[in-house]
Amino acid sequence: MLKKFIQRYIPDHQAIRKHKNLQIFGNLLHDPNLFHLNRRSVAGAFAVGLFFAWVPVPFQMVFAAALAIFLRVNLPVSVALVWVSNPLTMPPLFYFAYLLGTWILGIPETKFHFELSFEWLGSGLHIIWQPFLLGCFVMGVVSSFLGYVSIRLLWRLSIVNRLKKKNLRRYKPPQI
Picture 1 (cartoon, rainbow, N blue to C red):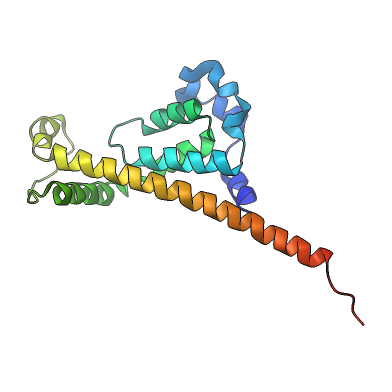
Picture 2 (tube, helix red, strand yellow):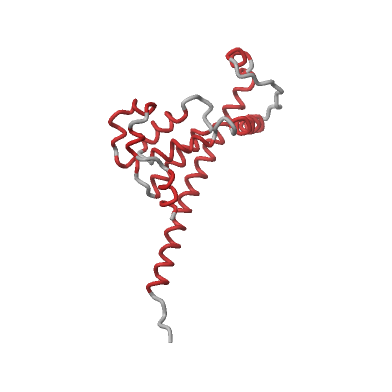
């Protein structure tokens, strides 16, 4: 059930191999394990994708793809999950990461005004970078772990339920 659900939404492996941003990986994309849908591969892909969703750098998908190739987990799932942090969700996610970082470090929250410019990155980011990056790292590790464990459990429950239904059909008592 879970496998069929995921299979509906992932692109064809040929399309992924031809993607312009993934061409840097060359022949590494020909490993069939990168496109298998099994419990280990999908759970690992969730861990990789959710971790890199919290990494505040451009080209998160390339980093997620590199780690997915290295760990030999499902490439399309790991790259797709990076989009949990998209332009609409980034501000609240990263602000929460900053707040978490200030709480962990025990420092007061600093009021700042964000501007999307290189000038602000040079002058304003130095004020918040430590709690922000710590919060992003902690949230990346936590969401990665929770995603991995959740998929493993959901996959297992899916298999157990399917086997129960199969056994009920097989050993149906005769009707009188």
